[in-house]
Image 1 (cartoon, one colour):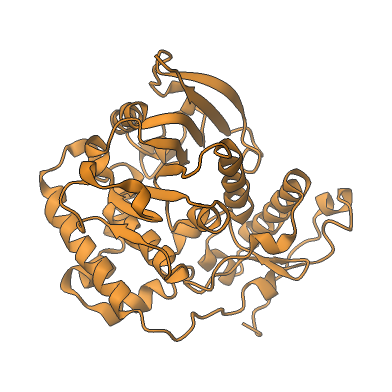
Image 2 (cartoon, rainbow, N blue to C red):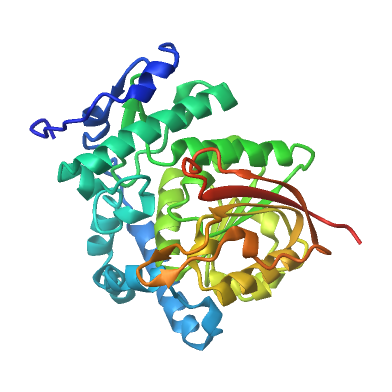
Amino acid sequence: MDTLKIKTKKMDFLKRFDKENLQSVSLKDGLVDRPEANTDKLQIMKRISKMYQKLKADDQSVNELYKPGGEWDHYIAERQFFYNDLLEGNYEEAHAILANFWRNILGPIVKEYAKYEQIMNNETEFIDRFVERVSKNFIVWDELVKADIKELRVPDIGNQWGLQINGELVVPKATRYHTHAQQVKNLTTDIDSPVFAEIGGGYCGMANYMLRDIPNLTYVDFDLPETLVIGAYYIMSAYPEKKILLYGEYDDISKVNINDYDAIFLANFELPNFASNSVDVFYNSFSLSEMPKATSSEYISQIEKICRKYFLHNNMDRKGVINRGFERTPASEYTIDPKVFKNIYRQFDVFHGHDGDYKEFLYEKIKH
């Protein structure tokens, strides 16, 4: 890393911010290696591999709407050799990938404004955008949350990287994840043991902050099998003391006492089997717009059934956006039943709405 030469232009926007908020910014320091501690992950890998094997055996007979489509179909195909290691129980090989997932083929799951390889290849356009916008998001976070920057710290899992600001590492999306975690905390202050569910938790960056900061929380992640293994690895490694349930470690999810667990990792196709009115806050960020419209409509119908309090989501809200040959569904076109949810607000996304493409929506369940 010491030989890496990064040339970034001086961002004019930095001049507009209070120097007390943004004293120093260093991309080079943000890219130094942060390897995981040399701890035994064999039992974690065995559980994750067994979960993935069960997921792939069961998803052969599920509704087509719950199978990867759109952009995700391509993403999975590009990384098939890693998933084959999980299927075959090659624990050491699979762990080697997960222990460095921030910087290898799984890296796009942490992407914000630039991929790791784009920065390492010294692609100035992406470097400039990453430094500028992560810095700007930090300023926004600092003004909104009014917390010590140390609150943005993340566990040493997966060899994380980011932008070093004021001497602290700020990883991609940290400001967003922390802010929304605090938002969920505020929405559930009157609930003794809140249940939070997310469709598409990714590597579980937001789950990390919620499990750390919200007492008695149960976090539920509904995701594609290939993504679920990354999120489960991250949380199981970061919180070995937590009680965690994986897909396949039960007979019937509808009979599981959700509050017995700190975190539950489930296949997306378990949504129809989940108990009605059992989740206090349902959340999605970005992925609903990346799905075919029929799939997102199916997910939303399940959210309407399962959610008992709030539905919060941030998604692209612009027509005509095509990625890898698939057109994204604007958030304003989601089929949300006004008899089930009332819209509390719709606003430009604070952190990812620089060009007005992304919006944040909060809905409240209507009691009948």
